[in-house]
Image (tube, rainbow, N blue to C red):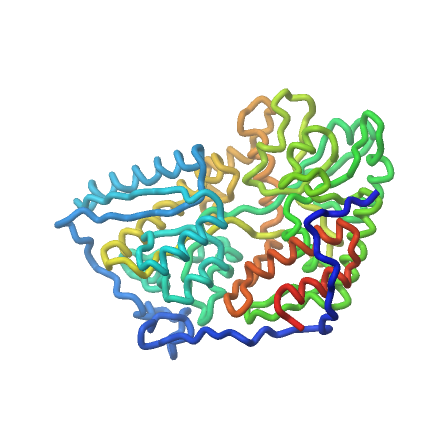
Length: 479
């Protein structure tokens, strides 16, 4: 029986417009005299020019007379926060040894991504912001409303303090260059993607081999469901769970060549391919091939995967260890995420970037930039990836001897075995990473993403594809 969600839509739906719907009512207007470095105010400056654009003054020398204080807001818990503190301590010592400057950095976790965004917006309103903040592009797009973050191009291209962008994963750069004018108001930091875990013991008991070095299709899942879904000792109630309904919606749209949004804030979901995808997914919900965590009134499916309620699960590489049974009751396989077909592969590119806030001095900005360089240095981005489940942001990090050794871990008794398996799966997906367009008009990209999640949950709850699309448009103010 289909599970009807108690918190689902009220049942009053409006008829949405077909095709591309543009949200053009944005009451916000940029005051370019106050905010000359806002992307809408910059004219006749090419961010790809060989010379720095001259948007932000960059000091040639670091002031040493007084300590330089930096406040760094992040989202990491105790374990990841401890590693970040180690890398920060290394940086402050380096600044003292190499430049004779005392740098004091207060790194403070704000909890989760919603909290850090809301806290930062409140800080912007109050005029007291951190110096550095991590967040997603849609967060930065919101901060740009008040010119609260600075473009990093002048630091990137500086002859002394700059960095070679060709060493950074191109899709990560593209994500951070999507703002108006192509300027980088944020920089790649803790990037991750999704991977698929599966109960290797149950699949082997049924004579099914799930490839670890290739991509399976939705057709494979349909076939396997006939064997794997049921009440037997080597079966599960559902075949595969998708931890993030929003990611599932958005990524599936791309695989089906449908429409979602774009950087102009157009809502593109009401089209034939997106509707066809949702119809297909709903059939898979009904025959218990696909599931969402709401099937068990959970936010994530890891506990239910471990309990055997579902045989496979798609979730973040950064959360791999949540899917491993502590008692070793079964072996977990890790593979790339399933694709609808092999012609339109797509894997979500996720994880936060890092930005420098406008409410800072020239000295704070330079030190903040140097900290960003330090955290994303090849050895540090590789260490961060190996210890946290994120991915290196630089090619040299991926190719470093330490990371290559990490990728080759195949001993199940090694504490990093599953992290390495997740990293191998992620590496196979880098060529087809996709990121969400970021916009902050009358409707934000965060709003669109939230409604994509509700739409997929509503579909699981029994509403039709057209109903959930119509309600998505209505909730986003499109009529």
